[in-house]
Image: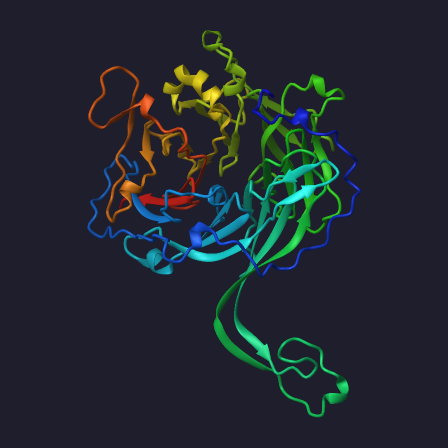
Length: 499
């Protein structure tokens, strides 16, 4: 077993020279797609709340969250392919994309009526669904490549068309999502079915016509970026210049140009000459939101490195390293595992960043490398149960984290379908639950508390009663409003601030 889980990168085959391998041809749009539980007709619960009579918030400015919608089938029998594996708002929050283990991408669009309502409501409807990746098999390595969508990243919108990047373990794809409400017919050179007409049979000229049709949303693959990663891709990030993006696996980070699919440039390589000397792996990477030459990446040793591409083409030597010294009193057999950083996110302003390890979430100032400026325990009560969490592999779960639009609050997930929201201004935090019991109109989320002692109050839940099979790994926060999306197994919960 590797120190980062049951599947360590040291068990994978040696890295072949793959940078010059020509990419596979661009795939045509697929006509067949496995149906997602999120889009099953009759099984989607789209419950919007009427909060016209809601009370005004208190003067402390803290959000009081209430239920807005739930997407996905409410069946207890959940297939593995329907489990949501990533959630991402686009830059203005009008679209919300989810990816699942079945390789599907489902895009939701903000309901115009809910946006124009007073007060504004956070309601989303299905906009487009398409099959992004299919299962593959690498015959050279005898390795099965899953279709699971690891990450989705939106590009800045420049016209009515939307573009997004999606990736599985090996291949990144650029998708174009566009609308069409007109069809063209009456061509002289081809039939209505698209076949080319014999010029000798063209005896008269006709004027092509334009017909109005029901709105059709089309998703088509525009680029396929493949054959550049030996290990599993864990991160993709679009640069602020909107021309390049990075893709990171366990040992390397590659820089791509959006117009070039047959080559990428390796900007970070931590693979040792002898794999027995491997001491850490890359866990997450992200570009700076405004500085196109700066990016950060985290490692399994609990460190975050900031690199500047202006200093050297190969960024093996970092410009800054952020690491907090370990407290000797908390040293244990599990210290290295729980200190591994599962996610890192730079703030919208670019001044701060957050990192999530197994038990806590930390806020760092990019001007101070020695220690985080804020540390928030997520589920400290699990420190006494690390042995059992190690045995059931939960200790290797990779929780994500996210900022709100003003960088004043952060959010991350936990077990038992709990998720935590931390207010940086008031230093207050709240534990909420994404439960099917609250999917009723006007339902305000009640704070949940976990009891670790012998006596348990009425509204508390014992730490021994937590369900570790229910976990919130993926969350997203609307970039401009207090609307959050939380993925709980195959269901997508949408909550909003109670006005």
